[in-house]
Image (cartoon, rainbow, N blue to C red; front, side, top):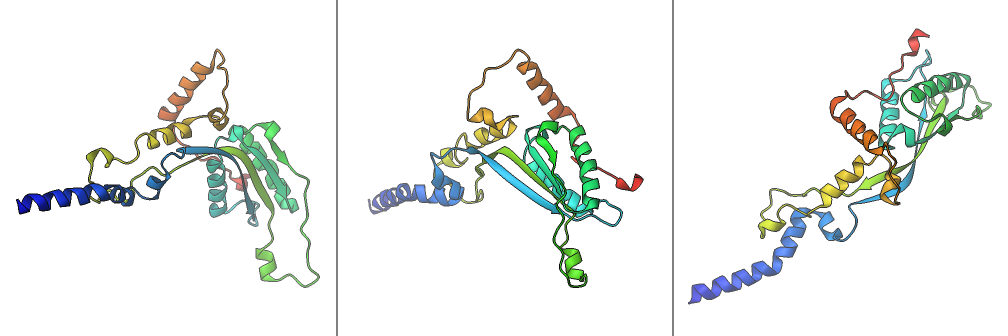
Length: 224
């Protein structure tokens, strides 16, 4: 009888702390139940670039441009502005514009701003001044989907209920589907489908599964 009473007390204690156990196991996202798995918001990203002596970008700078453009979504949906600060940067901006147009950027959304020379000091050129001198900057504006992290923070921790051991149901599905939408605006406003939208959707999925992933920028200005 005593053992039975202890078992009942233990089960009551366990049922009372199961919410805390699962909350610690699933992570901070568990505390955000009821919040959407994604939000759509406008973002602006910018990067300043310094060219090499031959007028090309270093690999690290090229990787930075690629990362920025990927994070902003499809090139066709981005509004891109190129601001040159030097004559060399102005020449590079023209090459960069041609490359972005060939990769899917819209000409109406891609603009090279008038060259804006940087102010120089009256002191002799110092090494630090040379390092801080940018040749051009790239700014991208776009509507992007920001998803919530639906993964379980500590998957090795024990779970009280097997039903809740998989985390928040549906969160990952909603987040993944939101990331696959071609135009994030469709997630916040309705739109009537056109006759060819189904065909275009199938072609997009076919390219996604069968095409090779290529870098957004692969320019060799040494040939010029």
